Length: 187
Image 1 (spheres, one colour):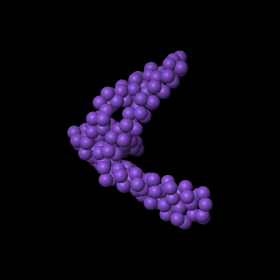
Image 2 (cartoon, helix red, strand yellow):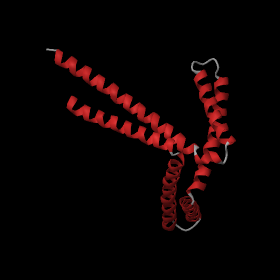
Image 3 (cartoon, helix red, strand yellow):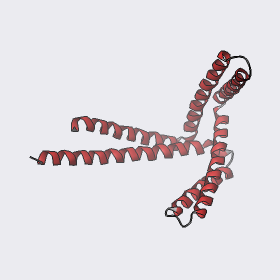
Image 4 (cartoon, helix red, strand yellow):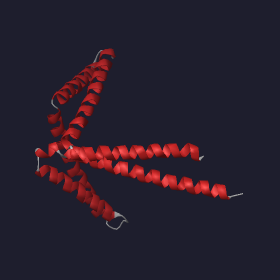
């Protein structure tokens, strides 16, 4: 049992450490990390646009074909524009995140006040306040926030995910050692 689980746990630890390193790099270089994300999104959008155009070409004539060709064309043109100007794409992505954080924060605050008698309402309120704060911070520094916000948010996410994986791997190792030692001590 231990020979099968420990290598997997070690890989989990290494993955966590790698994600933490990427998170630190993204926080240290938020513009680079944001541009890299925009390029990945642009490539996905390009693949989706080309796929829609190909589906449109293969569709029966009529409304379905026209809609697929229009949507595919729009997605492809947007993808080319984002890939040609990743900083502009980063600004647009930052604006979308800004709107999301503001809406998410307001929604959570309203939901927490409506459910004030429920256990855990304070956590929802705190989460809403944090989202609202991030949205307002990004809005206050608009459009400069486009150069740091996405990269820092990605970095924090990678760092926290990596730390969680390392902690999980450590817990799994402890459980495995405990199970192995109790198995060996049992006659």
